[in-house]
Image (cartoon, rainbow, N blue to C red; front, side, top):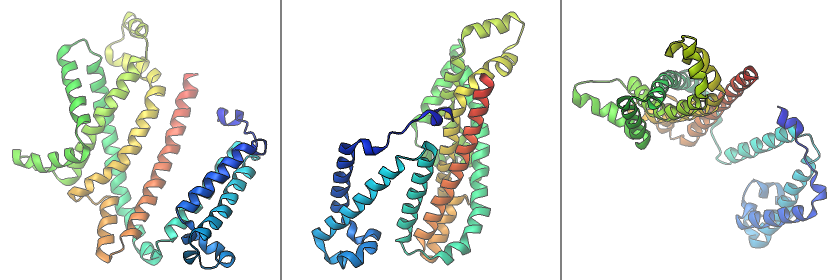
Length: 323
């Protein structure tokens, strides 16, 4: 990353006022929340005695020590290269999250016995629903974007009504309307197709605006030049307009896919065996709610990070191609 290579971080040793403010804020925060009763209190137990009985002075003592450790950490990181700083902070935050999860006293044997079923059944179903929905939503978005850019009033009216309606309703309501409402009209839809249809219609409406903005960013001269060469509308879109618009379309579309991956958990309310449904079901069965919810949360996070990496590579590809 060119930007990352050009960033120069000034060590905080040259900013004593900043260090003092950070130390004071950290002391107040840690003392206010009473962190002597947390994992920090366990580390400092031999020093200040029983943290839970030490009251305000114990909290202040723990807050002072933790604040000094925090400021010292920031101070030392300031001397490292930018990328090393990012890696170190990520590792430290990950360790803090793991320590937070550890405080729940989770049953790791129970997690180990269920996690592979959650991955093989829940993750695969979640990815399938999200992948099919994003493809269909993209097709719908292209059609909607072209209609909104059209000079035909009928096409524009339909596209604008579609985007307004489906962006104006909560996704959960759309899931219920499709799954429970269609049978009253004589059309019974299974849970998975109903979930895919709801996600497609909802995200297609949002992505219509993304594609419209991307297509609209291409100058009208490109359209006129293609017409002068005898290109039809479809060929112009495929060969000229969309390739130039993709660098603008890819980033928000990738964000929509990541959001769709997480919003696919809403189809669990109609019985689809995706990740969230299994986390709830397995947790309810053995009264191990936190084990399953935390496991599902980490799996969602890992999938989102993988999609972010894929998105960054696609963006880099189109950025390089455009230059």
